[in-house]
Length: 516
Image 1 (spheres, rainbow, N blue to C red):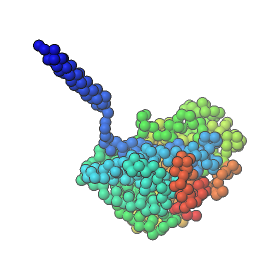
Image 2: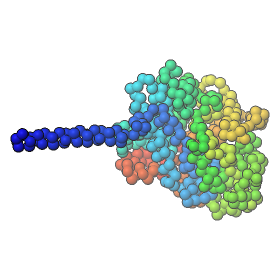
Image 3: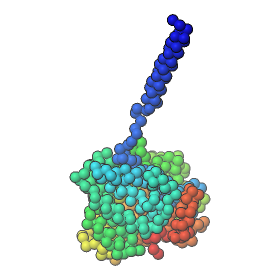
Image 4: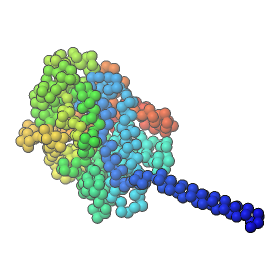
């Protein structure tokens, strides 16, 4: 064999080896690609789980306890610092900020994504309309707390890359909320796919419709001082659609050891000894022999510190309950407690954290009691003609008293106790709006955003302004939350446009529907 042939064969051999090695390398890389792919990691998620994520995150944040619930004088803390807010009529952005990211990031982002993803999927039409109802609920809470907010572009950061959403006027927001609730509630169909994985109602279309129309009723009543014709037509449409009338249809989050209510979790941990029922709230219940005081309250008789608030000295007896006066700080409350004959301020009544605000307690969003009381007012105003004012009123009171059992078996009230209360505290037509809205205040206990909104709308109950001397407001009550610092720093141009339209970014400025 010639030398040239030998060289040629060597070249062919070397090329063959290289080709084999290259092929082997490619094969190995292909295997590595497959190895690097997580075979168990989902690439998509059923949107019903996003709906559940949104529902879980709708439970009210701790900021609601320190602002909403304190403003309407139901629960208050004498402590300042991180707990300062409605107790002293001062701003505290660390707490007024909390509903904003909580709802936009965890609720609205999810429901907006569901609405976008299911828009062209007829099989998920019910889910899409359920998401529209939840979105309307959350936007209503946010606009009632802050006023003008990002609405039409709110939640569109991922879907449309709108990272600096414009703020919309509250009037425009309410117009669209009414449209959304009307359309979504009407479009829900029992003949469509049933979303059985839904946490709120297990896909029960009839209950979802009642939830949607009850929110529509609530939206209509919000307009009672600002647009009576629209309020009337909206209320009538809600009633025609069918609203929540019994406790079995209540919209509420069922908590467990894994998903605990923020307020209940707080009151059972670091702040257990820092929050007390107010004198105005306790006195209203006590002076009318309201059996709900037993369901709600506990007083640790003789307690001189947090650690001495033990089950052994805890009493739920209504006659022993004493509410903390408004306008006290941790210095002046000492003298107030002594004047009330208490060993210390730790003896004032609290919400019972082993019953009503235990870590597995439910959080109610919309209830039959609230709906019946709104219907009582609508009937009183002549906006509807069904039933009678006193029938709606009595049903609302009864339903809330029966609702107590949902918190804990130890909070349940007997039918005899309920009947006795209604007998000794009859509905008085001359005091209709006061009675109805005072009962709404009680029926919305622990639903801070709703209690705060309806108090501003109705003006009832007729509370005495918090007398704390260091207040930052010029009026008698806080009227809204100030905008979050994060928005002012990152979305300032749109925030400033809203301020120009709405008024100064402080606690005194009224939202659109809160007409003096």
